[in-house]
Image (cartoon, rainbow, N blue to C red; front, top):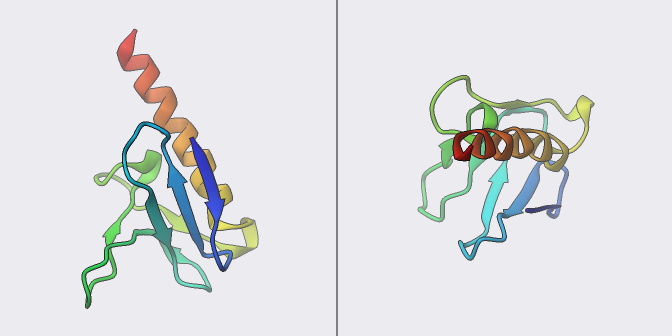
Length: 88
């Protein structure tokens, strides 16, 4: 898994390195909910929840705690841990 910061600290991309397409994420520049970018005009994208799920507690980003990429690395690691636990 590779997470890269994009043009600004409130944008990031995840490459899950499993052959799927890249996922782009963003949050408002002053902080707020994290969204998975969609390329449909007029939409913000799907809100992302903790551990990179789409249900549960909505994931929020605060620029005082670092870049969005940093937050996504932490949450994606928890997601991967959950996946490994299920495979056992």
